[in-house]
Length: 187
Image (tube, rainbow, N blue to C red):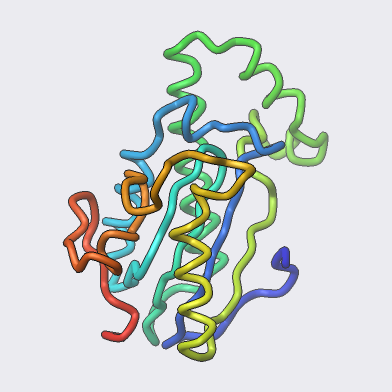
């Protein structure tokens, strides 16, 4: 479900997804994974807990906990997408990916171009679902962790070996080497 209304609930867990424009594998092309982990570190510093995640070549899924005093979810996601977009464009320029940069430039709507937008890096909306109960959380955890194995992706032979995921944290009780994770039962 694309977000058309703002998610205002705090002291809540959200399942969040956002996607690169036209499903272009920009995370993979630019090797943006370090930047995605950096975003999680920023969230943790803001007391926003990262509970689970998977980074796919062109989108991400995560479970995050918003404390009572957190900014609204749309602000968190829009800031993340804006700064990631700058980094993606910078990396594409550095790699001399001119055709891809032109494609992203040509995708900017006239109204947005008038405001100074130069590239359409992400889909304009994002998906966010509040997780009301443990059953829904566990369903989303399973979806997140098994996403790399789906027929569409086939990115790993075993979800526990896919490197950009919190699966080992949950299933093997291993700390994540890239980001501080909080178990969903601890919020």
